[in-house]
Image (cartoon, rainbow, N blue to C red; front, side, top):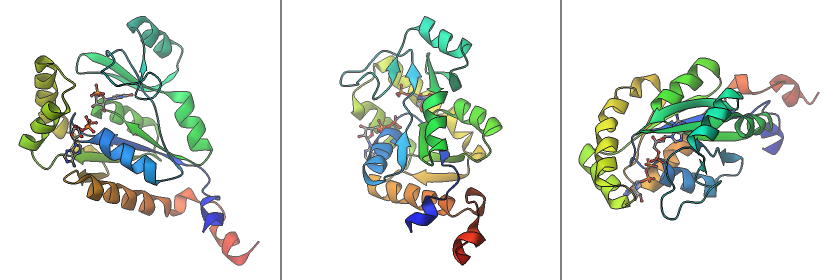
Length: 208
Ligand code: ADP
Ligand code: 5GP
């Protein structure tokens, strides 16, 4: 099978959005552990580090000045103001990996996803949903990383974010992590079989 995937001319961006607490991080971690050839982009943010988060792993935690400098230098693929902080995707890592044939997951909000959609027609867009809003609230509260103010903002913003689901190619419901990961894997598998992602299909079969 490898000779085929080695001939995928480029990889692609996989944009994963969904309300805070839907389980993007959890599903993404499980997916990355199981799948070679899938990597995650690390965003830059001006938000404060949560206990347990590691700079360069969860995010690049930067000052507002540094974030602005990255924008001014054209280093961001997309960026947005989300839940009172700035978040953005560093361009170089993601695009280098795509060129190397990797699938690059961008765990970003709906505003960032719309920016990517305008510029990268090859990207795929998945919206991760909680089974219902009560469960979403439970997950945000249960994660125990947020102040009461921050929980309220995230929960309120969730309703607005859901308005954008129709902009996406696929939705996945995160009821159990196991099933959600399987669903995302199925989508990746289907996307890998798109004719447009391959060069010289006929030549490959006839052995030229
Ligand atoms: P997001 O990255 O979308 O903000 P997280 O991955 O941080 O969400 O998940 C929010 C909380 O919900 C975490 O405490 C996580 O352990 C929990 N969680 C994620 N997926 C599930 C699930 N399928 N069932 C129950 N709890 C979940
Ligand atoms: P959190 O503060 O909970 O880690 O993330 C808050 C929100 O910011 C989530 O909806 C997440 O998807 C979004 N986000 C994280 N990184 C980026 C990014 O690089 N760009 C954009 N546009 N949104 C991001």
